[in-house]
Image 1 (cartoon, rainbow, N blue to C red):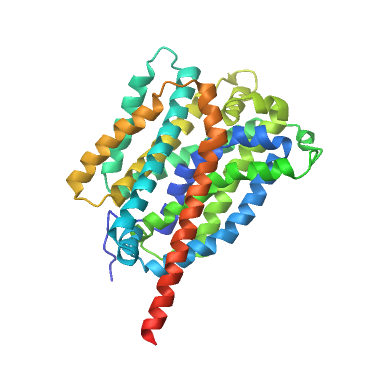
Image 2 (cartoon, rainbow, N blue to C red):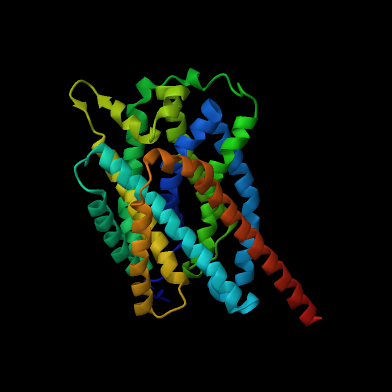
Length: 366
């Protein structure tokens, strides 16, 4: 029997690869600086502890998936708690996704302006990037997946390249002494890594688009991958620059590209980092736009118009008149911790709803 091709469904592996790029940008770039500034040379321990706790959280997500029985999460919630309460949840989730799009794009535009396009007005870069993401988000899920697979292939290759090429600059003794200031800095840094890992909550929003049931090994795989995506550049920044210098850097993972040289004639290849960052940001924002479109209770044409309006919201976040220092402080003190608490709270809330629904079903059978 020949399987029927569906452009709106993906496999669990393809979902993992999408999360690897979209969530990986946050774990690989955005959380590194706050992690090092709070936890210092022990930041890698924060990452490992967060991984273990996240794996304990995954069964809650699996329980929710089992109760939805492959229905879209929003549809299931509407049936269980009613339309009004569901619309409130949709509003909060969409507001969060727009905020994350704005944060990701603002960091991208800041790095682009400082790094290699200082004369280009940020508004021009913002408009071009947002329209490109909007067009991809309008397409089928398989289109988004294929673009991601192509981009991710080279992202991974370049990542291994910079790690291996810089091995001669690494001094692993800079990772010691361990726990110089006790466990408190380690625990304080965990929330930044958790703010990235907790985004696997989006698996719940896409599970009806996956052609097979998601299991613990699928969640465990992406948790391990995201942990590795943080640990690699995090340890690299510490052993190449030292914990003090790494704390002062705005984007430690990409400072490592400035060290790359092979022999006397092969250097200045940091343009490859441009590909990595723009590809990750492109997929992340496009996927979040696609999720927003999925949650909108409207017809396809109206969804695209609403999504177009969302571009202005994201653009407003990107071009907000605050300094980079202020934005970095907001990110470290409020925005990243808020991400963790939002998704964790939503998972607990939906888990409680699923438990009550299960109890009601058992009572009705009896």
